[in-house]
Length: 614
Image (cartoon, rainbow, N blue to C red; front, top):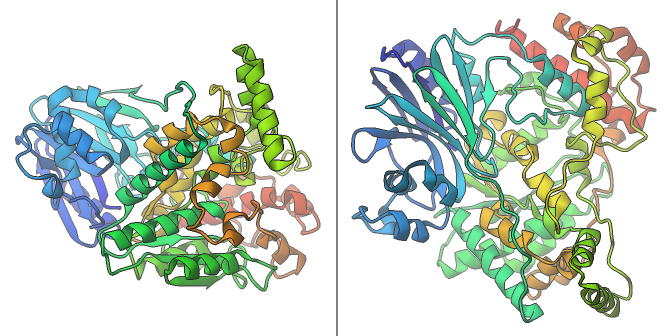
């Protein structure tokens, strides 16, 4: 995605031009097509352009329609025809040449902040009113695009790249101890506003930040709705509507030219790839989507590459396989050209970056299959209890009977979300203990044992049909995942787009009766009939048949130990003697716990080397 950063000075002083130049230089890796600096009394903006499409993009930012209201940021809007019909009465250009930025500015001019409730897409931007010196910063409901800010020294600094804010002298180098504590407890921080640095904050998804007269106010402008269940006459109608939505959301994310797809051997990413191919053929686009797969054979019997290859051959798309068997945990981290903006508990980060580098040689846009598990692998029990509360006992009997007749068994009552979701939400298997290697002083200061118990609590369930899926989609989980897919982490100017996390598709899926459509992804399997080979379409969901981290530990090719030159700052958080004594490969169930101090040590060294940490 393109890069942006801004400085707002409420006293109408002009921002330091040297700082703006450092900011734009630091953003160049994100946007190689153009670099711009804009400065006025009260504000300074930086922008680096990455051309992606499919919609026209503003070649220069900040952009304006009237010379008063200026837009800076990333805006990719969906349902453009509807927006133009509702808000674009003053747009004289045809839709094919109207940029998303122009559409939004027209919507804002038409109804102000109220228009945010009607926007769908991936966006993260700031809107500056030069006449009133007021700023609105906005992040979409799903949070695929990041937004960071700092309110210090009577100014507001913001960017979609955390490292850029660390260039600002006024921003403290102090760490956020609560963020570090959560990272050591569960590999990430579920607080949607904290960052690893005390002065730098995240704008939560579905929120707008208003800055005026040196005051910051944050409020929610929207949330995924909870709507009445969908009731259609014929079963085939559900499949047809799903196909329509799926094609729509993939089409809106495909670039004009070459497109890439991260494709495993599972159902979600292969469906996205097959639909992308169909759309490109209909468009007569010569550049077919190309699939990119990571395969760990012969480290273990990894069948992902084999099944992905079957789909690629079946739908007729090129297929590139990156072998990950030789990638050892934490290998090449010291030689990476990028440093993660925050601690990272992904031991195969180098392989992750290599995968993006492979994609970027072909396309600037890569589609993913993320999000399919949240709703399409649903639970029957909430649906049945919902009907019982409504007094629809006959419906319960009909649903259970119909499912049994078709499948020869009752629907699974407690089908769960994928294991990665459990891990990231801090609810690991019961056999994984509370980490005993934490510094006791750090534990007492932050009450980490209480925090650990708090993190083990299940999320608050709100949705009557899809409680776990809704909790996942409205939590900080997916925004956190997609920050690691962002160029700020990968260092590669390639933009990840997840069609299955489209707001329109999610709203449709949240209204689906879980039985039968969300049992073992029945809806997706029926929708892909005749499109995907049955070897993949009917394949049961299968977890990765081996854990590369555990296998490398078992083979003694890697040990979960700190280096002899651990960062001195690490001792503030970790009891180094305790960690050394308890850390060994035999404790496989807790191995994912034990990599957190290693990851934190590597990250602390990287920022300490920049002399930017206190």
